[in-house]
Length: 224
Ligand code: B16
Ligand code: MG
Image 1 (cartoon, protein in one colour):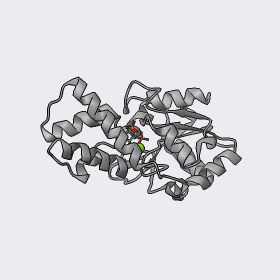
Image 2 (tube, rainbow, N blue to C red):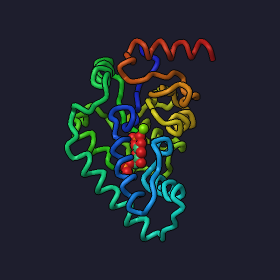
Image 3 (cartoon, rainbow, N blue to C red):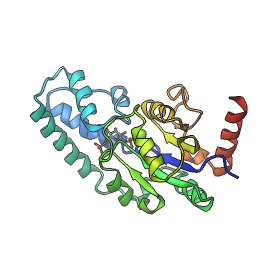
Image 4 (cartoon, rainbow, N blue to C red):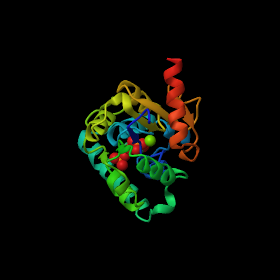
């Protein structure tokens, strides 16, 4: 018997590495406005929604825009981003993802997506993974950005699983915090020194399996 009934996956940084495309499109925006920003600064944009990302970038460049101008630039950025991901296909799925999703399906675990991106459905379609998901909650269905737990609570609700029986996979600290705020287990995907609050950290889904996840959660219950 498994100690969890659903897995909720973040998209960018867990299933696919779209961060580099976001970086490139945001950088083009900054450059056209007359400034630049670094890869380190770009780290802060992971898991952060589109308008909030724009606000951060403008603050780095010391730029002030009207709300109409912000809207126009965010539309432009999205067009550049969509252009960059138009050739995307299943070759860009991060290692270990399909194997783990197959295992979850074989063990009757519900699978949901919990992403801040408004382009999540387009990306899942392009990489051919849409059919693995029992529910898709994205930036079009949420109003509160991570670390608010809305995106994950909606995912849990959509697959009708209680939060304490859900495991979230997240690459951003804000996303890890959102999962904890929602009362869920959380596996960080990335660096342990950044994702300090996660129950366990892996460097990619290649390190995950149904059996391993059960063991991690069993140990957590014994310790707490
Ligand atoms: P869009 P995730 C997030 O995806 C990205 O990490 C973040 O960099 C991006 O700004 C956000 O989606 C919004 O994306 O402009 O496509 O709506 O990590 O929550 O899957
Ligand atoms: Mg992410």
